[in-house]
Amino acid sequence: MGSGFEINSGELILRINPKIYPLERVYATAYIFLDRFYFILDGDKETEIMVIAKPKDKKENLEEFARRFFEELLSVTNYFNQFEKNKDIISMVLQRALFSIVPKPLTMEEEMEIKKLEQEIEQETKL
Amino acid sequence: MVNKALEIKTRILPYAAEKLSNDKFIVTSYFGGWIFLDEQEFCLLRSNTFFENEILYSKLKESGIIIEDEDYSEAIKIYSGINRNLFLQPSLHMINTTNMCNYRCRYCHAGVSQGRDLMSAKTALKIVKFIFLSSGPHLTIEFQGGECLLNWKVVKLVVEKSRKLNKIFKKDLHICIVSNLSLLDEEKLKFLTDHDVSICTSLDGSIDIHDANRKTALGENTFQMTKDRILHIKEYYKKRGLNKRVDILATITKLALNNPKEIVDAYVDLGIPILHLRPVHNFGDALSKWPQLSYSPQEFYEFWARAMDYIFELNKRGIDIMERGAYNLVCKILRNKDPLYVELMSPTGMGRSNLLYNFDGSVFNSDEGRMIPEPVFKIGNVDQDPKDVLGSEDNINVWASSFIDLIAYNSAFRPWGGVHPVKVYQDQGTIIPNISMHSEYQIYKLQCRFIFEKIAENGFEKGLFMEWSKKVIR
Image (cartoon, rainbow over all chains, first blue to last red; front, side, top):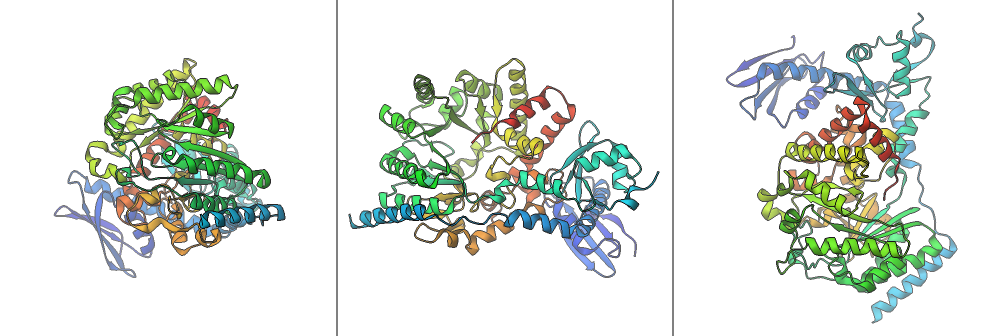
């Protein structure tokens, strides 16, 4: 089944070939337009995905939006393909970033200062 | 020409692009490298046919869009630069010494109209201990409120203890108070100055706007008093030979939208070189007046852009004035430097880079976290081990939901942005953001576009941004 769209009673029905665009990419694309459209996703993830989009503002040009949706779908798919190809590097850099700080243990002098402070807290409790 | 891809292993990192008004594309890589490309160059990148164009190939390599031979050192440098917060332990520790206030500001986020509580000396000492055990080498302690000077005894105690402890801990310690200044007498000013405590206050712009927004509990105007106190503090610093500044914040309400020039002028008149134009939020007492205070993201952006154009004009005339929000962005964009501004961190810096200690010793992930009636953002209390508070499941769940890469992956402005989970929760009723509908994110994207268009013009504004980005401001 090929991809395409039709407009019916103020709603846009997009038909998407899941062999070209996986369902996850369709979710991601619809998410981008949540501020402008209500979405219903239907169909079959193996044969044909259907996206029914109803505009929140009646002034939306549905045909233009359909083309925009497919453009964004392509962009999202391309992005995640690049992400997939580079996920080892991305994960390595993020790990380096996230784990490069090890909390510094207290020195004996610092520990003594904290103990003195604890004694003051104790005194305040007795007051 | 030999295809470089055959002799050198080249990777195209994930990138996102947006077309600017001058028909150039801003293309940004996953790690924060970026470049302007014209349409033809962008087509070559998009179709993976740029290898034979040596100039374009070099541009893509230098900007970190592509990497060669697994050499990701530049990518790491950029990423760790713009995300320095990920390498630091909590650095900003805010203390709410009281929820009482002698002002009744129209937009009060802290909701002080109901406040009756003061922090005790015992709780204050526990907070000092918690702070020194949990913070890294850079530490800022900031007194918030309510009006923090209503609990002067505790402010004094925390300042003295922190300075004393720091003689041993030797952290890069910065202390500041956020106050309306109405209770700042000579004795307090001397103490704060002697202990190197910075002063920050609110000035919403011109007299009409400020007085409409910020009145005392008795209904009195406050502009003149605030202005006089700011000038007095500046004079006092000057007399003591100190090169210290007074920090000022402006909260922008609907009333201010038509007056960007007047607001900037109010700061210039006071000789204040930095202003921060911040949108109003719907927390605390602001909630009940929200229709009178609020505006759309587009309206705020238009106000901000007009203020920025006026700031450029003033700087061209030799008047040194800078907008803090733009500074935060250009530091990241032009210098790969993280200004440690919590709203531009991903995952969020709340409960990680910032912590708030409430008057009763409870710990929140942020100042705004305590303003939500439900305890969603309360992550523990000062009787607990800091490790348990920071590593609590509630805290980590909020970080996880704020990882901007998961929700704004297709935005060319993603590498420098962040999510504010508390504002998301307040606006959308969940900590999982619907980013395209969140007003702060919409403003952020418009501001980024504005900044990139100015950079692309390569004129005075870019030069000014370069100058700003060299500054170090806490």
